[in-house]
Amino acid sequence: MAAAPPAPTSHLRVVVGEEELLRSRAVSAVRAAALARHPDLEQHDLTAAGLPLGDLADVLAPSLFGGHRLVVVLGVHEAAGALCDALTGYAKVPDPDLTLVVVHHGGKRNEALLKAFKAAGAAVDECPKIWPNELGGFVRNEVRLAGGRITADAVLALVEAVGHDLRELSSAASQLVSDFGGTIDVDAVAHFHRGQAEANGFAVADKVMMGDGAGSLEVLRWALNGGVPHVLIADALAEGVRTAARAKGVDVRSYGELMRTFKWPKRKAENGLKHARGWSIDGLSQAVAVTAELNADVKGAAASADYALERAVRRLLAIRATTGGRR
Image 1 (cartoon, rainbow, N blue to C red):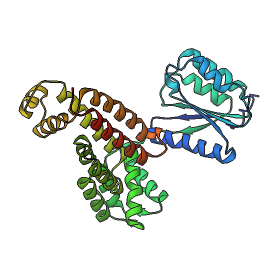
Image 2: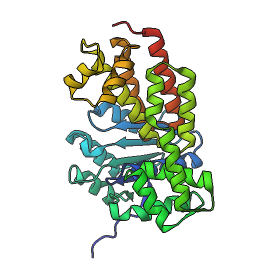
Image 3: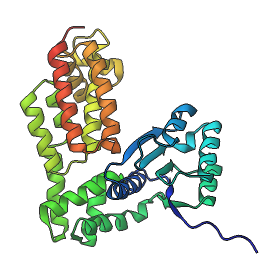
Image 4: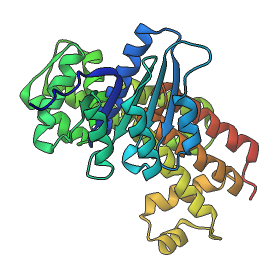
């Protein structure tokens, strides 16, 4: 008779699937549970791609100071063979004072690593892709978790207004319940969507690129209060910086020249030229780095996406103020 599989252990965990939001939530749940049991938890977050074996060995080695540790290895589908071997070897004899979570984006690559962890008794969080015909159920569940209810026509209206990004839909659902409570109907969704249009990411980006400190923060807060998804504001800031950088990099004096050079529509060319005048090339280079960091922050790297956005806006304003329009 074949041996029974080992019982799931809290010391090994696999988070696998294509949906980024669900993966992030699964890791956050493990982190919260570990912190609840071990308030002095020592935490390590590693990215598998390019990770030196020595760095992995350091965090998996028995601690000299005692206490529980949480190690999260992200993107193990991109791990090198030697790293997979090291993780597989560790899973055979895990440390009871350490919780190891491996995060895989789905697919066949390094699938053997997941099988080895499952064979060792790892608990598994499945995060499968949510297809367009499943978005309605996702929205209803997000509204329910936020403490509200939503009508069928409001679900359709919200998906149509916000799109298919799960993070944006989740943010919108939470904001709707916060603003309207009880039952969310199609009128509430329409009101929410109008608020998005009036204070959106592009309005924030325009204020920042023009160096309007007070205006930038005011519009940012209106946008956040109106439920504009964090990722949309971050994307608008990144687009504003990129557009100004391209405009700054060519020697033109009119938006018409930018339209011809880059095949841009008139509004984009006008904004690109207007914004570039107040920035230096060095300043825009620094701004690109800030918006790249912000992109990761609003997609789960930061503890608070609201704070990450405000911090990035303040950093961008400071860069513009200190570097000016010098080349």
